[in-house]
Image (tube, rainbow over all chains, first blue to last red):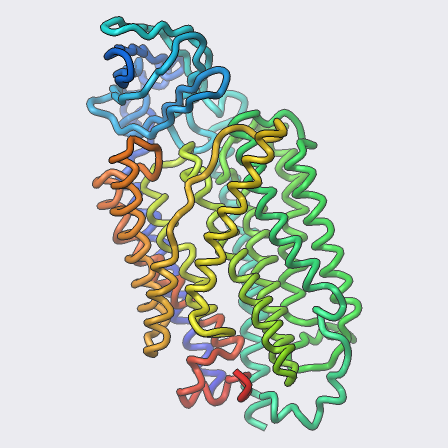
Length: 202
Length: 363
């Protein structure tokens, strides 16, 4: 009786897990569209081979944050996805790091402090995991009130050395390994439960 | 079960996993693995992935090899014949140590698989890389296995002092289990996410729930879930100290992870479980509390000071809240189910609980 009730509970939990997993995976995916061209935009694929960003930094003055504006080219390259922007002093004194939401298609804006001039590193990325696009480098900045620094950053795809199916294939492999491992653990725990039940029933 | 097993206890005699030195090694390995993985992430962010044999990689591989060796040693030496030892062929293995061995094997399998993956397809600089997830799953399983080991050995002794000790060891494994599951959101805590921000509140709210509900129902001590969240916070502070020290030695960069506030979630779970709430309800409440506390208090404070902390926009939270609560409820139910398998205190009051309870009056 107790064992049957335990089995029923496991069944209910598994069913709920499947339903909830589908909801959870579907909701954020729907809310946060993947970057890159839509299927109809065939010509866009070629354009994505070269993604750049025009970055302009407008300095407000001493001890005031500067306005950083990033414009992706082509503007649809990231879709409506977020952009991770990190700008850090080459000697590691300051790290400005934020995830930005677009204020218009392909345009991102943030205020960062740049307390000193000299060489600053930058790192930008959009997209998911290995399928993302990354740009990094070093620029020389000269913060002075009212001036503007501009530079162009070149992005590269994380999948430039691998076919597009690699990431989904990897996750499928992980799902199989995880399912096997968790099923093993679940069976062990179910055995423990049933062992306890049968001994108690004696 | 224990008093019914009593007459057979002479057949269950023999050193337990603590006496064999296995549990202390597993506990040390779990803590070291926790430090090592964050050290590795910090290294990747600020120094890059220059080779297979970086200091953090070596640290993780070495301690997981020791954990695997300790678990195999435990399987070999622990020959007791108890209701909690799985029969396999002519041998019996303590159920928890089997889970530890599976987890450690996954971690050690992940290392060469990950290297092969990087060589074939390039470096995927994300914690959520497919092979990285195999490693994280392995780490989480070793900690869950450690908790199960300690709890089962606790149930196999009637000595109150030993029960207290093993209950506290189970609590320690619960702390590192929460720490290990939170590795999944490490990139968000370092503010270098490689996936949409919406996943951060979903996972931050839900991932600790499994362990908190599990430990609150096992109740090795009063306010167990709260103690676990306090321990987790202390562990994360120790991690911050470790990263600062490593940075001074030029063995890590300057990036440090934000420490999430989980203590209110622990309190909520303890209060609800003590009132007999079902696992999914306690989980749902825990997820909601975590989202509210971290979303409103920490992010608001960070914005006021201009600091870089959790950067959840209202849109992010809006998208995350339903999936976060659903996942929290699910993991709460899973935590309660696992506690039921281990004979939790909460189940004792029900007819089924009277059957499955492994408890003893010394609780």
